[in-house]
Length: 381
Ligand code: DGJ
Image 1 (cartoon, helix red, strand yellow):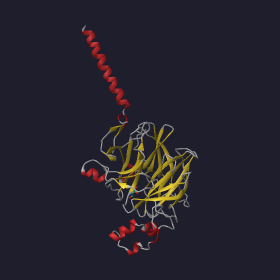
Image 2: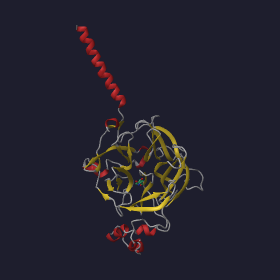
Image 3: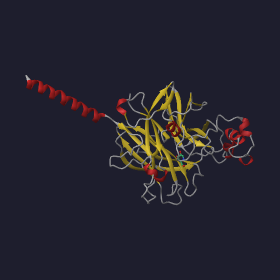
């Protein structure tokens, strides 16, 4: 009898152990802010990035930053990693790299930031857009670049860089705004008059002929297959949402000013139950600031600010948990799981910057973010 009880106890214990091991094997743990080794053990290097899901695999594209000791500046461009489960990532190498060709705008020494890739069902091509600054010009050029590839991991063929929508007014710009004559040199920068003039398109008019500035950016493909480029324009004071042509390689000329004069960057857009939501940050360089979120019934309709999405300590809310938004990822097969992806920048060694991934939660229809030192993708639906 005793032996039987012993055997039963051993069997129960063994089953618990197996269940425990099974559960552990199945969990997919995200650790926001920790170093995140790829399958070769190196910290993942795709900052300011975004993710696309294609053929049952996630592909993460972002800025491949030079590790502190890497003096070879040709190792710079857009990195790509692939994963089946969003936790284990394999380095797929460079999707786009700077060149030694001094006649190319992509010459080594230029800046490539916040690259995003979308797939065009009609052409069967993958299209990458990125923020592009020219060699030796700091952040003055404010261009957006486009590259294309037949395969998802690339290498992508660089097409050109440009300032969008030259000679075209946005759809939400009044005749009065078009005809205003006030110039930046007439106003004291930062004064109330300046702020009003900026809201009314001071910089948009200045850049009308040559094209609009395009810095921090994202891409969004709507349910009807139309794609949009969203970027910080007008000296980072106003975001533009600009429609892309059917092949996604150019702008159609239809564009909308979002939250004029509110100084937003790091746009990360998503759609939920027919509404469009937009996470952004303020503009404080690499230093984190309070995040923001806004909602609209349409990409080309007015946007309503919903305040700061962070729900943490005072300091966490002031810094978006020490991070800046970059993308919102809808997780395949999970009806409600959206991941807020952000960067915790380390300006002295950008390659070591950390990834802050947190599940988007909801509070009376507003998307919010809470801190979890670690969380399990498999536990969320
Ligand atoms: C803030 C932007 O969001 C980043 O992508 C980068 O451009 C830094 N500014 C540079 O200071």
